[in-house]
Length: 237
Image (cartoon, rainbow, N blue to C red):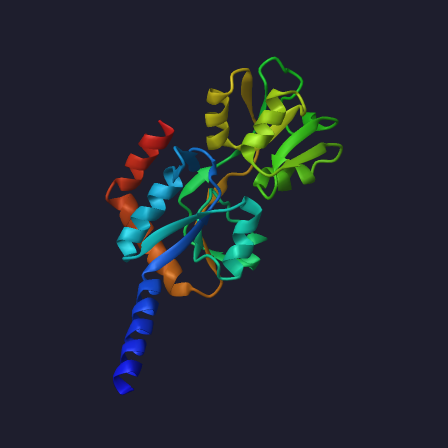
């Protein structure tokens, strides 16, 4: 009996030990070039970056692809250990989760048809149908502009499709993925706007101070050794 109990205990400890060596990371693979699907595989800047972080801190990274608005709830209920999804640090989000140091700085832009000359800034969106992705910064931004007919979509490709088909007049999105989408969809252009810079960071459940510190240390090393710059060149140049 003692031998059996010892064997069971050993197996349990093995499972727990293995579990501690794995980080389940949530993303939304519809935000190229940060995270997207390629031949059924989740790839992108964020994915390579978090795998490098995993190597630095001795953890195996397992990616879970879920809807953007479901990422933080999944993190809060311990279904995920981390979230990396081109997510902006905001005061509102920091009420519910902790963030690593920032790893990328972005801006919001407006995407419109090339022939459209009426939309030149945020004020000119009044009276227009504007596509946003549910939970994205653009969604929050448009909510503050009076007179805009905001249309929410569950994904950036869905919002882009609505724009190219004429169902909406414009779309607000982060600058980097916006650049990718106008390359892929002829007939669209970017309108730059006067908006605050946004800092992307890795989200961690509240109270996991040691995990945040280890991620920050890894990010610093990745930048100092030149790996970060190589990823920037690969995905943005």
